[in-house]
Length: 172
Image 1 (cartoon, rainbow, N blue to C red):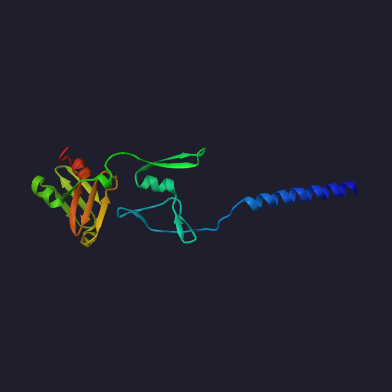
Image 2: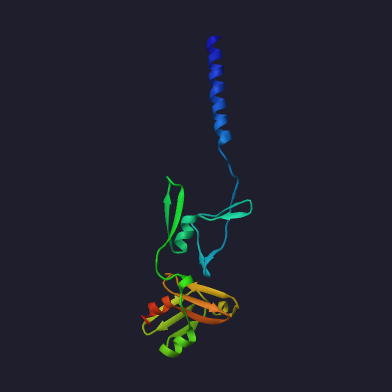
């Protein structure tokens, strides 16, 4: 009988310890979601689906950093995430030149159909911008697939980024 009581008490202690631990663990109920994700007008594919919790979408930060051209440093001891610019031209410091001016001065040709192809001599840069995307009145910045060159469409006019001119070998 004594052994049964000791076993019962031990079982209750172990069970209550598990319930106490469970009571301190916070749980969240979220849903996986499928979204169209684009950066500067270019569709991107996320390897991991975003989560939606209480109407807010949470994206995988490492993937978003990679897609937007940032490096990510994670410090587990400090519980910190640091996004670092990988260098090069950024959109905010970009110098823009009207495509018309570059065409007149250097003879750069622009072909716009399903994509936009910029050609200067034997250099070609292709952008995922169709002729239909150019008619908007807002300002949009489009990067090429390699993210080495950029175009801007502002009020229906096309502008080359300084990075595009550099890729073409103009104004170095």
